[in-house]
Length: 319
Length: 295
Image 1 (cartoon, rainbow over the protein chains, first blue to last red):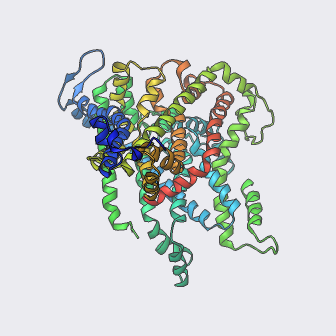
Image 2: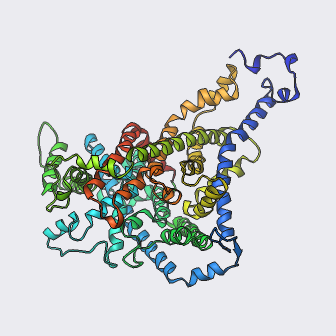
Image 3: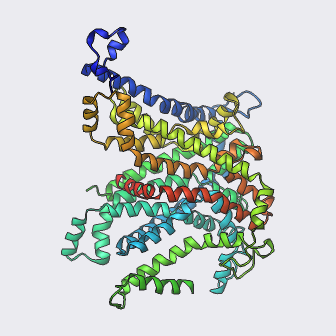
């Protein structure tokens, strides 16, 4: 540490910048830290400006244009949005996405919470590690690998799922080729992959609950279901809000599973919003229209999240 | 049937080793419930591995055989014939490791600055970073595509998948929380010892934040390795695909490819993530569990 500026005698300062930043005064250290602050955030701020904030503004601008890369962009005002709100396929894709979000998020939150409560109660260390690992494993797989694998399992004639359902007397279900059930099959696939993630977040919430409160509740006679309902769930409500909000945001961006398993079919019955955007933007090279769809999705995400936080004031309990 | 067998053996495990008693009904139900879902999550894995070891002609036989009997490794060989597997897995590694390394650097620097350094505009800039967290990748992908292909001319190169991922709002936020949790006393002591500002960051605070760095590394590795959407948009040449696109490629047009070969490809492509998970497991699970409380 001999090179440190702290030991430098005052007389050795040569140029004004060095003097300004000299570390032997508190003011100099403050200035150093300020400069370092700007230097340190520069890569992140520049990266986000170029690849997130700029493109977000770009999306906004593009949505007022007609552009297909070959011809120069042409300003068309709100025409993309007028087309958007009249487009029956966009409407269907939003409907499908909402149905998928409701199914997956309800299944995810209920199952993850039930599993987390059960694992939390287990006294046996080895057993709880086993369950934790088992539930978390699918999180490691890509949406693509899971979609391909479960696509085979859901096959009508050769799939394992229909085979076992058949043993229980259920007639063959056309999971991926019937518009009635295709969203259910896709929702199950997604839940299978994401359950472990939500589960770990709930388990974390449970493990960080103050044990004194739980013990006090037991002394007061709150056991079993009553303890869960009136003590654990209120204490866990911030975690429930966090998990639900992040899951809804994630599921509103549904793409990999339906794209790989069904290509949006049969017909449009499993086409999601992001698939519509992908097809308009990159399939038809209609960048303006694609951007308009993306913006509408963004607006929906913001509104849904805002409503959730607003409603959460009624049921989330911050100790 | 398997459920019942599994259930009785696991309940036996939880009983007291000295004096065996009938377990309470509530506990049996809990274990049965947990085991049922553990089987549901594990069975597809078993099916993938055992089917990948079966001859293609046998791959769709019902009832499904859970234990690999044929031990036919030819499917694994065919993966290498049908897609440029080494290229693609190499691409996945180059992309993923570059993004992980890049994010660790940019997020550690920015997280430290936002968490521990004072400079005018810090709060506004931090809110700006947080605001970008709410923007979904899809909302910006069209302009990013135009930027990458027209301005930077990087379309269909690995750069297209690396450069846009180097800055991370999530990682910056995560590491800021870690740096803020470390007491100021370390810095005061270091100043007395004559350390300069860079040394304070690099030698003292950075090592103390290593659990946060590990979580960021594992989560980023997992997300980037498994990314399908972005490469689908940017890449056209098979030799430059990451392995996620290769796997779907194996399925062939209208899914006419051999299942056993596809599943062998999935097994091969998953091994790196499993290894990373085993290495980073402790940090990952603890970190995610801790993330739950901040809700």
